[in-house]
Image 1 (spheres, rainbow, N blue to C red):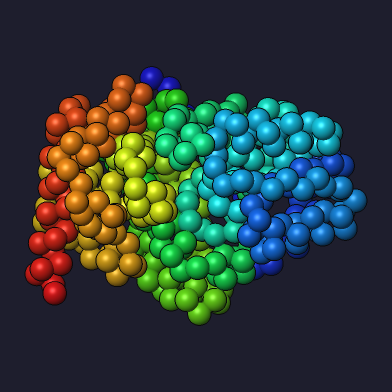
Image 2: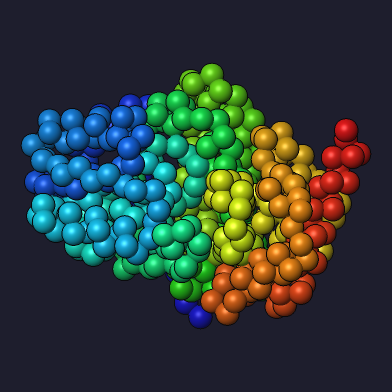
Length: 367
C-alpha cells in the first residue's frame, strides 16, 4: 500500500501576522471573498480586508451563519461567483474555515485560512466536516488539495477565550492517540494511504509539546499575552495536529465525537475539542492501557477545565439507549474507528461507560 503525506502549501504563524497577508498573496489574484461570522468580523475580518486593500486586492464580505452545512457552502459559493472572486479567505473558527474550503472548491479558488483561535486542527487539512442545518454530523468532504495559505496571528489567538485554546489542546491530544492505533493496525489515513514516517513523527511530537507547554500556554492566554510556550502550543494545535491527524490517521476518539452529534440537548453547546477529549478517554478505555497512562490524560484534561465524565459533557442522565445511539453512530461503516479497531457498537457503549467510571474514580481519589 502507498504511503501518503499531504499538507498546506504554506504555513505562516506569528504576532501581527495578519499585517503580512497582502504580501503573501502578491500576484495570486485581484478579487477575494472574505468569510467570517458577525463576531469575527469585528475581531479580525475588517483587519484582513484593510490589509488586502493595501495590496490592491478588492474583497467581497460574506457573513457566515454559524453552521458548516451544504446549504451554507452553496450560498456563499454563489456570493463568490457573483463577485468574480478567485481568492477565498476564511477567517474564524473550525466551521467557518471548513465552509471557506468548500466555497474555494466550488469556484476552484486559491484557499486562504486565517484562524482566530487555536481551537481545532481544521485549518491545514484538505477536508471539511459537513453538518446538517441542525448541527448533526453528516459526512467528510474531501478536496484535491490542502489550503494554499494558512496564516495564524498569535496576537489574535492570545486574545481569544482560554476555553478555545483548551479545546484546541484537547483536539490535538487525540492526534497521537489515534495515529499510533492506526499505525499499529496498518490502517489507512485521511490522506488515503498508510502513514509515513513523517506523519508518525509529527503526531508524536504534537503530544510531547502539549504535555510540556500546555499549561503555560493556557495561562498566557488568560493574561492575553504572546509567549514562547503559546507559540509552541499554537503550532502543535494547528500545524502538528493538522498534519498528524490527516497523514497519521483518525480512529475512535473522533468517531465518538461524531457519535455524540446523534443526541439532542445541551451536549451541542460543547466545543469540538471538549467532545473529542471525552472521545479520547473512550479510545483509551477500548485499548489495553495502564491505569497510570489513562490517569495522566484525565489529570491533564481536568487541569485545563476539560470534560472527563458523562456529567461533564451534559449527559449525566443519559439512558443506556442514548449511549447505544452514540455507539451505533460511531461505528457506522464509513467511520474512522474502523481504521484501528475491530469493534461492535456494544463494545463502544461499554467503553463509554468505562471511561466515565475511570474519570469518576480519579476525581474521588483526588477530591
